[in-house]
Image (cartoon, rainbow, N blue to C red; front, side):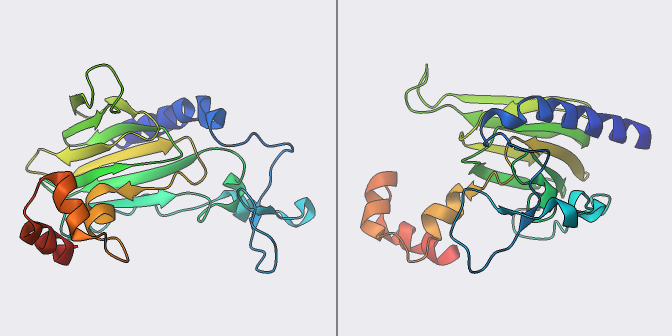
Amino acid sequence: MEGLKFVLVFVLLALASSFASAFDPSPLQDFCVAVDETDGVFVNGKFCKDPKDVTEKDFFSSGLDIPGDTSGRVGSNVTAVNIEKIPGLNTLGISFARIDFAPYGLNPPHTHPRATEIIVVVEGTLYVGFVTSNLANGDNRLITKALKPGDVFVFPIGLIHFQFNVGKTKALAFAGLSSQNPGVITIANAVFGSDPPINPDVLAKAFQLDKKIVDYLQKAF
């Protein structure tokens, strides 16, 4: 079983690398290890460390063998391995994540504004899906699939998607994303938990809800 896990993860990385440069700018040198420049101007990505100062630590991260805490409200935990964890990912257009699920845990509907995501299930059974855009054929069509260990599924860039553990035991998946910094917008948190809050009248009309229900949801988030 352990051998299968590693094989699946390496396959996932290989698949992810095939589309890694599709959305992030392509590097103009071997690498551009990120370095913080507090007095610098804003750039699309990160400043590059002097190549002479680069070490193996800039391309390494550990800890994905450690399960994430799934005791929260939704019963899932995402451990991201992005440019914040591995500075050497800067300009390479790829990142990685471990997703742990408690029994019936949910990675709630969300979107990655800068990345396509490819996921492989290692343990458990996940019900996953995404919703097409307003102008796609069928308008907001839901595309879903039940995944078992070894199954792979792709979520196209920018589309709302989710993963739900439908089993009575924990589940585990790994994901590759086609950006060093894919970003994440959790729909419920963004809509009902924005700071400052969105005017309740706007949300009541948009969702066709009573304003009292909107007030309740905003307090919950």
